[in-house]
Amino acid sequence: MPDFALLVMISVLFALVTVALGVAVWSVARVRALQQRLMNQELALLSLRGALSVLCSSEMQADQRQAEMAQRLRVLAGQQEQMLLRDPDQGPYQHAIRLAVRGASREQLMETCGLTRGEADLLLFINRSPEET
Image 1: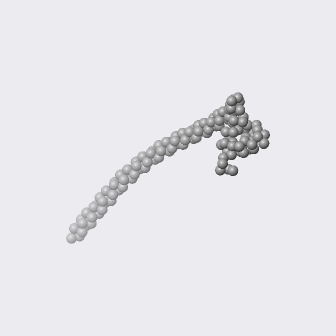
Image 2: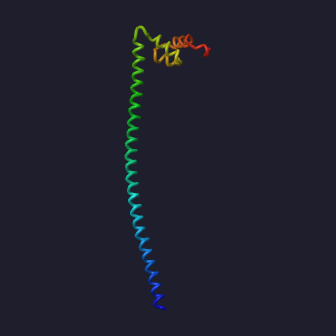
């Protein structure tokens, strides 16, 4: 009988070693699969970072172009105001009247159109909307 018990123990031990070996092989395969997945995720992350960098750069360029266009628009508006002041049919008083109707202050009229304080006050009084009186 002792030979039978030894044989059973060897069989159980062999089964345990086989199971352990199977678990080890499965674990190695699973680790490799996870490593490959991690590498793919890292590549995707690098790609996304590059795309985000390009997008941020494009946005900064668009902001810069928008600022340049706003500056050009301000320059053109100033030039248009100067042209209106030089136009004999649209003298400084016509320009001042337009500004007064739009709600310009006395100081703006004096500075922009070269009016005296009294002229600016008179234009503002004449062109005041009925709600303001």
